[in-house]
Length: 86
Image (cartoon, rainbow, N blue to C red; front, side, top):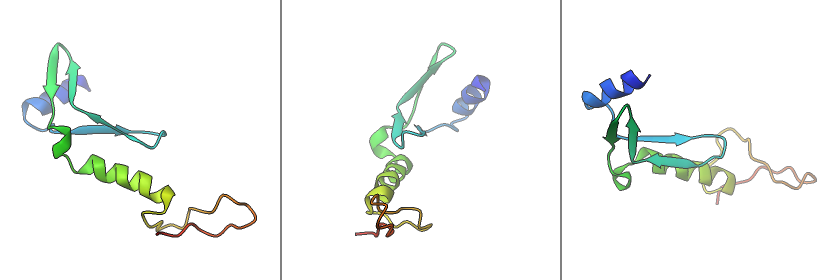
């Protein structure tokens, strides 16, 4: 896997990276250091995908983004009305 990353970077195939997980947040990666090399990625403030994913992750549970699958419900178990967008 490390060789694939280095090969892709050498061909200009890696420009930006981010990670996400069960904590429902975004960790933007500015550079990767491996095998004695530093891979510098595109500046974070020039990226579009990670901020869009973060906005979606925040927007779904807060009702700022629509819930296309109807999975969000009010916490009050006596009133299971789905959360609506604002």
